[in-house]
Length: 497
Image 1 (spheres, rainbow, N blue to C red):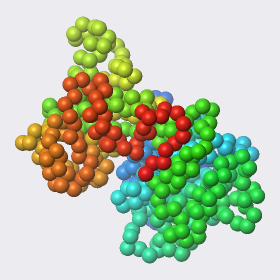
Image 2 (image 1 turned 180 degrees about the horizontal axis):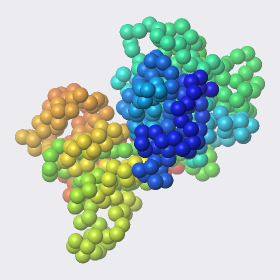
Image 3 (image 1 turned 120 degrees about the vertical axis):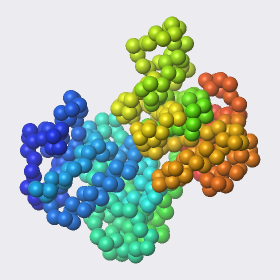
């Protein structure tokens, strides 16, 4: 329970906007409430209150700064943060995650997780760990356990509570503060060294063992094999044992390495219920956002966004193409052609469909957030060439930011100029496309940017239609992101390197 008395009760209003509805949970450092939004009727948020001394306040501020910088479908989105100096309280307002904790689920179902869901669950957790560990600097979660995982009605994992997460500092030998949960924390969290990505992987092994033994064990002790459910995939046992090695150097060294091992082990496992592992693997990662930003007007951002959307739809289905600009006209003209209406005659619906791609015209940022909660595997944002704060922020938050610049020799430097103007932002995941550029122009730009994700796009008159040369470029651009369904639509998952 939270040691300090709460400043909130039913009906309390926080930040002149959030009315407390009920308590969701509490711990030693904080209490979490459900709140309704007075400015957005029907919208509910989770409000985390911490009331304690300066050290705890520092942790909460650190958590807020960290969450603000992160963007992943399996992490809560923080929307507000403020302090109440008089009472010593600090408040975080974040997404309310509908569901129950994994611990509550295990108790309610007597420790039973369907065997066919164990590997998908592991891949979901690995997906978000890989995201955290590849930040600069890496973010180490440090408290992976059943009470910090929410299970949604759709049986998806959401990580919550970043109260003890930390950024990895290579110059340190040990953590300043030793924190973690007994039974799930790695040995180095108790003074044996500094925690890093391998510490989270140990906790993943403990979590998997917990699931595989019906909640009885989270540490590998003598005789534990006898409690592992007999119907579970046997290839999981060596993976769990390696994750739970005492010494970090003996474990898997990255989340990506574990993902590769699980997928490789699944190569010869029959697909469940007629669904290939290849198809199912797409569901683990949640909705991915591709943001297409033009360096300047006429650079081909909309043309490229359309081509990318139809490419993704042919590969993975369930794609939305969003025109993130309230005054843009391109999608309105396209909708008139598709629906056969007169020029200037606006349809009441802002959504229309072309060859399986859902087009959303003149869309606001709030609409994008609501689409993220839907069933789309990919959302492609057409940002045009505008670099206002709203569109620039969506570009920087995207999973796959794509810059489109003119391939003309005298315009190639426009891309380098954009990169320099935004150099304060991490650019390691950016991709660059130059329509009609020469190979020499691509080579020079790769060298100048010190970045290998620079591609020339060949001439493509109709972005709605498939073009083999364009597909080859996009195959390279999205390598490792989507499965290759052209050679075999069903079957077993190929090992991804």
